[in-house]
Length: 346
Image (cartoon, rainbow, N blue to C red; front, side):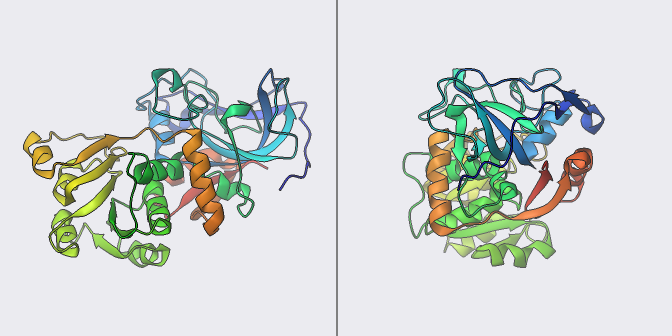
């Protein structure tokens, strides 16, 4: 779907961030746009999406470098409005999203690929983003800009967790997702499309049925069952799950829940705490533990092909206006949303 409706503006508004300054570190400014250079594309951003990464950047806790006064937010979608010299694939009117790591096109992650949008590079919380053509991915035709804006961080991370270890989840295997944040919701949706049985944990009774409606086969409330790895073993006849997507940093319980020769994709820690792990647990599980850093452009495209084939729709929680960006951050940080929080830019 390609229909040019916009032109490059004469002035644009962008949010800038003083990392470590919290929400008060956000400031909205107006400035002339930069003209795209060789191999670059100007994208009129229609929607941006928040993820837990953005809170870490805001708080000064992000693991990768963050430039002073950076335009924040890695996730966004929009329309191409101008292209620079040597651009071959894209033209004005194309709908696109950008990979979080613009230089990571395929293969293993390399140190040279680490520059990232909304961190060491300007991100998507702006009316106009200038991005490398190579980093851009077409939006699936059935998705809105808001839906497409949810994909670059949380969805690609879930896809990498399920498929990026060389073996990938197999039809009939069991996947466990911890928590009900954005990565976990995409793990439920994508895991089901790949033919897995999906178990998910949550602390919220009001989310249990919503997780089942999304496709979860089993839901474990860890407020009621703190030793949720025991419940996981019971649900798998003592064998354990083939794959854990650990978004909470609960590695000890994940190791106790995983089957022998299983796989644990370690996404992060919501609490920021990293408890010590007894190495005997690693030997006892004989499992692979793989820390993730989102994924490559090639993985993004492969995921989009599956999303398109099955017409998967991301879960949206609430939408805020561009002028309400600070309120969107605050809501995301405190409301325990079910689905992605969107900032609508145009």
